Length: 261
Image (tube, rainbow, N blue to C red; front, side, top):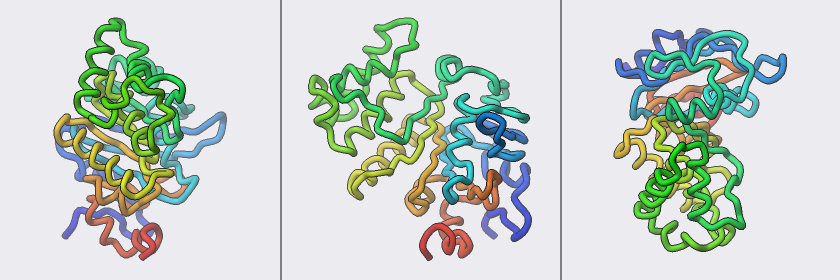
């Protein structure tokens, strides 16, 4: 039997979600209710993801997927519950503290490159809260050595990049802080198919070879679940279905609702 938790009418419980993660839980959310202003969007949410594991959040618009990323990063009001990294409570830390002290980086879904700055300058902006500027230069140089597409354009303004290259630059800029957790919001949005493939290959490389923990929100549910180790299906601020990515791809309920099946 596949590890899939969704008995119709019964949402997966915390212990079910924990089984999808290994014993080495890196990031944990317990009983979280959060939202914006006084409006609660997430209700009693639990989440477990291990070191170097990927988790994809799918679901209809307004289900609370991006609110999970925002809550982890520190952009929401948290009404109750707890967010932990390696057992340390980080619930009320600021985004800057989370990035600097706990290695949590957030990659926005909209085009956030600075078009008139060069590719290299954009990368260096990723290290803006580092105490030592030379570290930012070192990390930016590593990124440029790794990605030829960026290296060839290092002194050109970012506006000359294609959509896929811009997304690569956004991801790479986050790497300058040497994060352990990448929160990725809609990596494929607005991209041509060949660039979508490229972006997911880059994320896979970061997970497998650099041991990054990746939590992503992806509107293209099929792509997201093909990529991720585990998937949560969100409905109205709660996890309705959870399972291994490949199992959710084959789940007729998920297929009917989100995969066009």
